[in-house]
Amino acid sequence: MFDAVLRANPHPIRMEWKDVARPTTTSIASRGMLEESSIYVGIFAQRDGRVIIEELRYAEELRLPILVFFAEKPLNDDDVESDPARAQELAAIKTDLLAKYTVATFRRVEEPGTKERPLAPPAGQL
Image 1 (cartoon, rainbow, N blue to C red):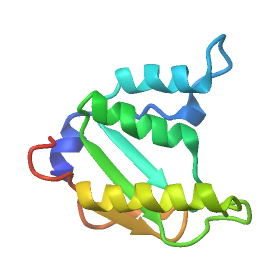
Image 2 (image 1 turned 90 degrees about the horizontal axis):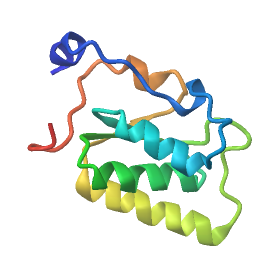
Image 3 (image 1 turned 120 degrees about the vertical axis):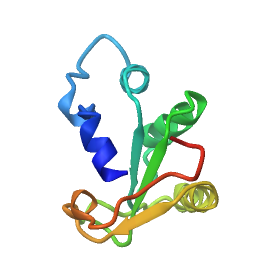
Image 4 (image 1 turned 90 degrees about the vertical axis):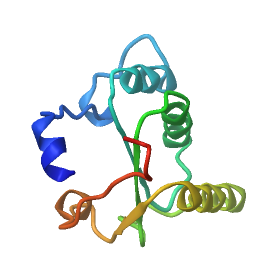
């Protein structure tokens, strides 16, 4: 699978690489990027990010193949959800993702791109 991905000559579309300072909302800009995409990679840490949850749901709606990564611990001092309701919502989303997808975990920001084993969505997703 890894070789097949490399042969496809992927071009990452990342929110932090895009000029999202447009006359649109972050959510609208994110949807536009997903519409250009062939696959969705969701990275979920310890905070409830509304935009990433919207992205995930829209990627599912678009029927994109989805790869999911969970940070096992906070990635920095700000990576802590202080709102108990949002923390509970994030836990529910992670439970849902574990039920639907193959999920890889990591401990450091650098890890998701250095995993030795290929990751694949459930059968029928690609």
